[in-house]
Length: 461
Ligand code: PMP
Image 1 (spheres, helix red, strand yellow):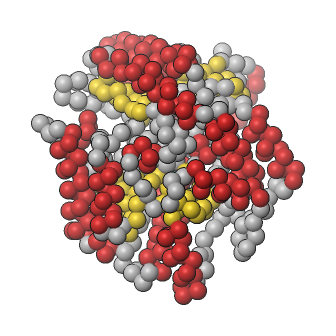
Image 2: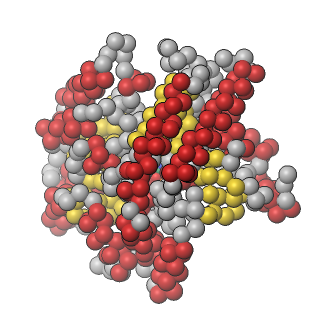
Image 3: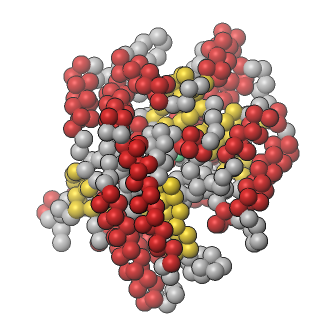
């Protein structure tokens, strides 16, 4: 049933807008689900239907959907100084205070901050910083990036090149920068027959080293990775993988970039993913939970050593000619600072660590479900991968049909998750309670059962 309001919005939407990651012709037929308001972990659509937002929007709304303190922080800053830039020696208090906070919260050796408005722009900036750094050091041939298949680092020309997903490359003529994609560190999918997880890790590390030697260490500038991979399907790397990658980076003088756009600020139950995975990046990229996505903002936090090279050499090769109109935007940084204070005051990182057990264990019980090949995740991020054959891990054909159906059933059942092919991803707000976690787990069971009925009716199982 649609209300007159939702009806007029539907018509206006389908006649005006090209939506990201949306089948345009299908959208014209079915119209949008117009999300109207939020409250805690819930959002409501324009028909008044209530959903648990079990993906926190796009992996980002840590503090829930109606945090008054963030509205107040935005309003106060809007009234005082709604906009100013940070080019050419200008600055303002919110960007300075947030930078201080970021330096305090990130691992000790990360001391410098550069702001952008999105994760994609942040990773584009990382590419340019790393190139500038190597130009400044007089080694212009050291420019290639190592990334991983199934990584998600954004969609701009450079960050989209680092991303390792075919549909972000195909038809967009990417990659457009020098990047080599290594095997995704996901044992369930990419482990070989008879291989143990430890052997898999060693094979991936050997592959990384062989790639560095084949390409020439003098040509490899940086390795970029998400500590736990998110949008590619929520993949937790095996133990020893990250320390091994870090050792290779040190051995061959390669900068190590931790893309914490999803992992950062408590998602894994630690402040940052690199802490949980046991490595020290030279550059750490944050966004999403930085402002709970109430304002668009990203921050790159990096070492004094990288900063020094850039700072010392601007006279030799020119000023760091890079920055955005909105770099350090006062309203966005004011909201970010307040959001991080809330995360700390309410111990939301501790909450994620405490609820990780019930949430992950609750979901693990679906490993026995006829559709489920693997349940994976850590902290408050998880995924259930549906497969046609549990024994051989054979995917369904076509991939995505059941995932799309499960996503739709989720909406009917009042739960928003995300389907990545036939993998169902969950990433609830950090404010969830134990009861919320149990409710998400319960609804996932209903979604799986109803999806199984559908699969049977379609002759897919
Ligand atoms: N890096 C990671 C790890 C991400 O998950 C994302 C977004 N999902 C990005 C970068 C890109 O961020 P944005 O969509 O803000 O450009």
